[in-house]
Amino acid sequence: MKFIGVAYLFVCLFTVSIVNAQKGNLARPELKDGIYRITLNSAVIEINPASGARVTSLKLDGTDFLTGPAINPKYWGSSFWLSPQKDWNDFSHILDNIPFKASVENNVIKLTSGKDSSTGLIFSREISGNLKTNFFTIKYSITNASTAIHKIAPWEVTRVNINGLAFFPRGEGERWGSMASMAEDSAGITWFKHDAVTFPPKHLKLFSDGK
Image (tube, rainbow, N blue to C red; front, top):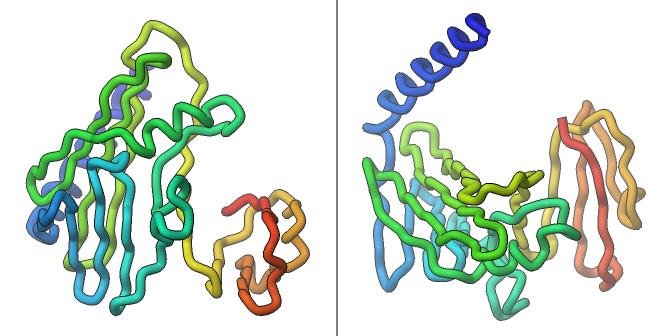
Protein backbone atom coordinates (compact mmCIF):
# COMPACT_ATOMS: atom_id res chain seq x y z
CA MET A 1 0.00 0.00 0.00
CA LYS A 2 2.86 2.39 0.74
CA PHE A 3 4.34 1.78 -2.71
CA ILE A 4 1.01 2.43 -4.38
CA GLY A 5 0.61 5.65 -2.43
CA VAL A 6 4.06 6.91 -3.45
CA ALA A 7 3.45 5.96 -7.08
CA TYR A 8 0.11 7.78 -7.09
CA LEU A 9 1.71 10.89 -5.60
CA PHE A 10 4.42 10.84 -8.26
CA VAL A 11 1.86 10.55 -11.05
CA CYS A 12 -0.15 13.44 -9.61
CA LEU A 13 2.89 15.71 -9.33
CA PHE A 14 4.05 14.75 -12.81
CA THR A 15 0.60 15.50 -14.24
CA VAL A 16 0.43 18.88 -12.52
CA SER A 17 3.83 19.87 -13.95
CA ILE A 18 2.67 19.00 -17.47
CA VAL A 19 -0.56 20.96 -17.06
CA ASN A 20 1.28 24.02 -15.79
CA ALA A 21 3.69 23.85 -18.73
CA GLN A 22 0.86 23.67 -21.24
CA LYS A 23 -1.28 26.52 -19.90
CA GLY A 24 0.59 29.13 -21.93
CA ASN A 25 0.16 27.10 -25.12
CA LEU A 26 -3.62 26.71 -25.00
CA ALA A 27 -5.71 28.56 -27.56
CA ARG A 28 -8.37 30.93 -26.26
CA PRO A 29 -11.87 29.53 -26.90
CA GLU A 30 -14.46 31.75 -28.58
CA LEU A 31 -18.16 31.83 -27.74
CA LYS A 32 -20.69 32.90 -30.38
CA ASP A 33 -24.42 32.17 -30.54
CA GLY A 34 -24.06 29.60 -27.76
CA ILE A 35 -21.34 27.62 -29.59
CA TYR A 36 -17.78 27.33 -28.28
CA ARG A 37 -15.04 27.31 -30.90
CA ILE A 38 -11.31 26.55 -30.68
CA THR A 39 -9.05 27.30 -33.65
CA LEU A 40 -5.62 25.75 -34.23
CA ASN A 41 -4.25 27.12 -37.51
CA SER A 42 -6.42 25.43 -40.18
CA ALA A 43 -8.27 23.15 -37.72
CA VAL A 44 -11.45 24.22 -35.93
CA ILE A 45 -13.52 22.35 -33.34
CA GLU A 46 -16.99 23.45 -32.20
CA ILE A 47 -18.94 22.35 -29.11
CA ASN A 48 -22.58 23.01 -28.24
CA PRO A 49 -23.30 22.88 -24.47
CA ALA A 50 -27.06 22.98 -25.12
CA SER A 51 -26.95 19.75 -27.17
CA GLY A 52 -25.39 17.33 -24.72
CA ALA A 53 -22.05 19.17 -24.97
CA ARG A 54 -21.36 17.19 -28.12
CA VAL A 55 -18.70 18.14 -30.65
CA THR A 56 -20.83 19.50 -33.47
CA SER A 57 -18.08 20.24 -35.97
CA LEU A 58 -14.44 19.34 -36.66
CA LYS A 59 -13.03 21.15 -39.67
CA LEU A 60 -9.66 20.99 -41.41
CA ASP A 61 -9.03 23.56 -44.14
CA GLY A 62 -12.76 24.26 -44.15
CA THR A 63 -13.86 20.64 -44.64
CA ASP A 64 -16.12 19.28 -41.88
CA PHE A 65 -15.45 15.64 -41.01
CA LEU A 66 -18.56 15.24 -38.84
CA THR A 67 -22.14 14.77 -39.96
CA GLY A 68 -24.85 17.19 -38.85
CA PRO A 69 -28.50 16.82 -37.82
CA ALA A 70 -29.56 17.05 -41.47
CA ILE A 71 -28.19 13.53 -42.00
CA ASN A 72 -29.78 12.15 -38.83
CA PRO A 73 -31.49 14.39 -36.24
CA LYS A 74 -30.66 11.96 -33.42
CA TYR A 75 -27.25 10.54 -34.31
CA TRP A 76 -24.81 13.25 -35.39
CA GLY A 77 -21.55 14.90 -34.40
CA SER A 78 -19.32 13.28 -31.80
CA SER A 79 -20.62 12.51 -28.32
CA PHE A 80 -19.81 10.52 -25.20
CA TRP A 81 -21.86 7.44 -24.42
CA LEU A 82 -21.78 4.58 -21.97
CA SER A 83 -21.27 0.95 -22.86
CA PRO A 84 -22.37 -1.78 -23.16
CA GLN A 85 -25.04 -0.19 -25.31
CA LYS A 86 -27.73 -2.71 -24.39
CA ASP A 87 -27.53 -1.58 -20.74
CA TRP A 88 -27.09 2.17 -21.19
CA ASN A 89 -28.72 3.02 -24.51
CA ASP A 90 -31.54 5.22 -23.19
CA PHE A 91 -29.34 6.98 -20.65
CA SER A 92 -26.71 7.79 -23.26
CA HIS A 93 -29.30 9.33 -25.56
CA ILE A 94 -30.48 11.59 -22.76
CA LEU A 95 -26.95 12.88 -22.27
CA ASP A 96 -26.76 13.48 -26.01
CA ASN A 97 -29.39 16.20 -25.75
CA ILE A 98 -29.64 17.74 -22.28
CA PRO A 99 -27.94 21.10 -21.68
CA PHE A 100 -24.57 21.11 -19.91
CA LYS A 101 -23.28 23.90 -17.68
CA ALA A 102 -20.33 25.55 -19.42
CA SER A 103 -17.46 27.79 -18.38
CA VAL A 104 -13.90 28.61 -19.46
CA GLU A 105 -10.98 28.36 -17.05
CA ASN A 106 -7.35 28.88 -18.11
CA ASN A 107 -8.48 28.51 -21.76
CA VAL A 108 -10.07 25.13 -21.01
CA ILE A 109 -13.79 24.67 -21.77
CA LYS A 110 -15.40 22.89 -18.82
CA LEU A 111 -18.82 21.29 -19.27
CA THR A 112 -20.90 19.44 -16.67
CA SER A 113 -24.26 17.68 -16.97
CA GLY A 114 -26.96 17.50 -14.34
CA LYS A 115 -27.42 14.32 -12.32
CA ASP A 116 -29.42 11.67 -14.14
CA SER A 117 -32.52 10.91 -12.09
CA SER A 118 -32.51 7.15 -12.80
CA THR A 119 -28.79 6.38 -12.30
CA GLY A 120 -27.35 9.28 -10.33
CA LEU A 121 -24.51 9.63 -12.83
CA ILE A 122 -22.97 12.96 -13.85
CA PHE A 123 -20.90 13.51 -17.00
CA SER A 124 -18.25 16.19 -17.34
CA ARG A 125 -15.64 17.03 -19.95
CA GLU A 126 -12.76 19.44 -20.44
CA ILE A 127 -11.82 20.55 -23.96
CA SER A 128 -8.76 22.50 -25.01
CA GLY A 129 -6.53 23.15 -28.01
CA ASN A 130 -2.72 23.32 -27.84
CA LEU A 131 -1.18 25.87 -30.21
CA LYS A 132 2.26 24.27 -29.92
CA THR A 133 1.30 20.68 -30.69
CA ASN A 134 -1.83 21.45 -32.78
CA PHE A 135 -3.72 18.83 -30.74
CA PHE A 136 -7.24 19.08 -29.41
CA THR A 137 -7.64 17.35 -26.04
CA ILE A 138 -10.95 16.12 -24.62
CA LYS A 139 -10.96 14.75 -21.07
CA TYR A 140 -14.09 12.88 -19.95
CA SER A 141 -15.14 12.14 -16.38
CA ILE A 142 -18.04 10.12 -14.94
CA THR A 143 -19.15 10.80 -11.37
CA ASN A 144 -21.41 8.41 -9.50
CA ALA A 145 -23.51 10.65 -7.26
CA SER A 146 -25.69 7.75 -6.11
CA THR A 147 -25.22 4.98 -3.54
CA ALA A 148 -25.57 2.26 -6.20
CA ILE A 149 -22.65 0.44 -7.83
CA HIS A 150 -22.45 0.84 -11.60
CA LYS A 151 -20.30 -1.11 -14.04
CA ILE A 152 -19.52 1.38 -16.80
CA ALA A 153 -17.24 1.64 -19.80
CA PRO A 154 -16.73 4.92 -21.73
CA TRP A 155 -17.52 5.14 -25.41
CA GLU A 156 -16.88 7.97 -27.87
CA VAL A 157 -19.38 7.82 -30.72
CA THR A 158 -18.25 9.82 -33.76
CA ARG A 159 -20.31 10.09 -36.94
CA VAL A 160 -18.28 11.02 -40.00
CA ASN A 161 -19.07 11.65 -43.64
CA ILE A 162 -18.75 8.97 -46.31
CA ASN A 163 -15.74 8.50 -48.61
CA GLY A 164 -13.22 8.39 -45.77
CA LEU A 165 -10.10 6.42 -44.86
CA ALA A 166 -9.90 5.01 -41.32
CA PHE A 167 -6.75 3.50 -39.83
CA PHE A 168 -5.54 2.39 -36.40
CA PRO A 169 -2.87 0.14 -34.81
CA ARG A 170 -4.26 -3.38 -34.88
CA GLY A 171 -4.86 -5.18 -31.61
CA GLU A 172 -4.49 -8.88 -30.83
CA GLY A 173 -8.13 -9.91 -31.33
CA GLU A 174 -9.65 -11.00 -34.63
CA ARG A 175 -11.85 -8.69 -36.66
CA TRP A 176 -15.47 -9.67 -37.10
CA GLY A 177 -18.66 -8.32 -38.58
CA SER A 178 -20.01 -8.03 -42.11
CA MET A 179 -17.35 -5.45 -43.11
CA ALA A 180 -14.36 -7.30 -41.58
CA SER A 181 -13.20 -8.66 -44.94
CA MET A 182 -13.09 -5.15 -46.42
CA ALA A 183 -10.27 -4.03 -44.10
CA GLU A 184 -6.59 -4.59 -44.84
CA ASP A 185 -3.50 -4.84 -42.61
CA SER A 186 -0.08 -3.39 -43.36
CA ALA A 187 2.89 -3.07 -40.97
CA GLY A 188 0.67 -3.52 -37.92
CA ILE A 189 -1.90 -0.95 -39.06
CA THR A 190 -5.49 -1.76 -40.02
CA TRP A 191 -6.82 0.28 -42.96
CA PHE A 192 -10.43 0.66 -44.02
CA LYS A 193 -11.44 2.66 -47.09
CA HIS A 194 -15.06 3.71 -47.47
CA ASP A 195 -16.08 4.27 -51.06
CA ALA A 196 -19.63 5.56 -51.40
CA VAL A 197 -19.82 4.42 -55.03
CA THR A 198 -19.08 0.73 -54.48
CA PHE A 199 -20.00 0.40 -50.81
CA PRO A 200 -23.34 -1.33 -50.13
CA PRO A 201 -25.92 1.13 -48.72
CA LYS A 202 -26.77 -1.10 -45.77
CA HIS A 203 -26.33 -0.98 -42.02
CA LEU A 204 -23.03 -2.86 -41.76
CA LYS A 205 -20.44 -3.03 -38.99
CA LEU A 206 -16.82 -3.90 -38.37
CA PHE A 207 -15.53 -4.81 -34.91
CA SER A 208 -11.82 -4.79 -34.10
CA ASP A 209 -9.46 -4.28 -31.18
CA GLY A 210 -6.94 -1.50 -31.34
CA LYS A 211 -3.43 -1.65 -29.91
